[in-house]
Length: 255
Image (cartoon, rainbow, N blue to C red; front, top):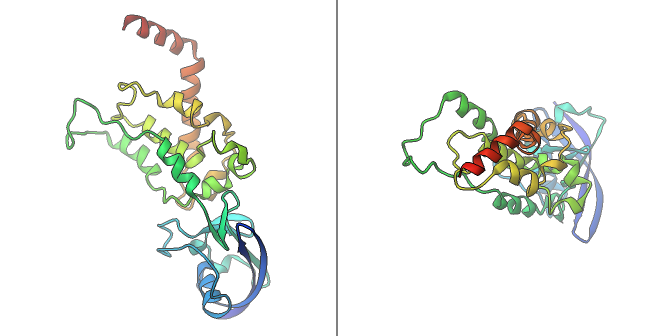
């Protein structure tokens, strides 16, 4: 069963561009990436798009479809009315390189700013032991495929370019949260306070938990509820809870 769909696809580069109109055949069971590939094969051979696995696991084909950040390979054409115009544009939060390809190097810069896992000094590799419950907590965050849709939809990054130097974004605050709740991470013993750095260096306070990052995550990670809110609570306890403050004072005095 086939029908003809009307597509609007953003064409251009860093200097500017606009939406180009295409009428294209759609077959049953296809996804938006199939249509983009057909456009490349039949009407727009120079159309640039980033993709790799076509299975929702590499995170490469991130774009915006009718204004919503999505993976092209995981968005079925059946969700659109046959008479509906499907508009495909590059991720808005990042600079356009060409057509649907954006420069996401901002995210790799932020990734390098998050200190890595600190192994416990008293244990050798292979001696690590964790409760299954603790494994499950962090395993959810390890499902991330680095599609950066959460980064794209976060209005702190999307609508305020000036925030980028001070704000890591939900993907990397989630990484900080994962490490902070890891029972074997020895960051505190090495002098690294992940809750303090989350607040002061990675911009945790900019996040106002609207859950837009959770809504677009293709892996259904509960970024806000399971990572960002608990991290905010722990950061607030560290900074404002009088009992925690007193305990830190006593601890420091005894050292």
